[in-house]
Length: 179
Image: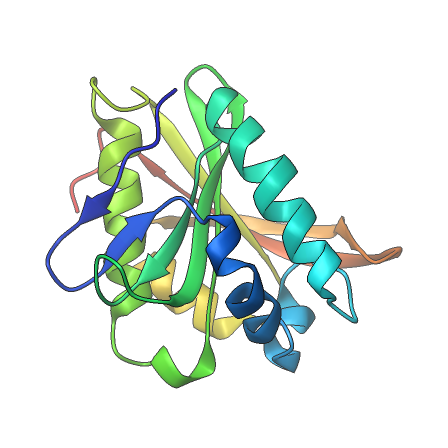
C-alpha cells in the first residue's frame, strides 16, 4: 500500500521519515507516553531508528499504516497514530501526542481522519476499528469517545507492557456507526 497523507487543514498525518527520528526520540522521553504506550523505556535513538526504518515501511506494506501527527504539512512530529491490521476487515488504532499539544482536540481530529481513511472503500475498506488502553488512561479514552468509539469492556490482565500484565479497556467503532 502506498503512503497516504491525510489532513483536515488543522492536522496533517504523513508517514514518519528518517528526518523525524530525533524528534520522535525527544517526544518519547515524556514519562506519560512511556506509561501508557508499549515503547521501550528508556527510549533511545536506536529505538526510533528501528521504528522508522523497519516498522513504518513494512507496516504500510502490510496494511498497518503509521502516520506522524504534524501541525503543518512539513512541520515537526507532535504525535503518532497508526492502525494495526487484525484481519482484512478489522484493525486496531493506537496513538500518542506530545504534552504541549494535548487538550486542543488535535488527536480526536487525527483519530477521525484515520478512521475515515480506514473505512473508505478506496482506503482500507475496514468494517471495524478497535482500541484498547491500559486501565487509567482517561485521556486516550476521552479521545476515542469523542471520535465515536463505543466502550466494549475491560480485559483483566489482557495486555503486557514490558513484561507486566495489565488490565485494559476495549472500545470499537464500526463502519456503520453514526459519528
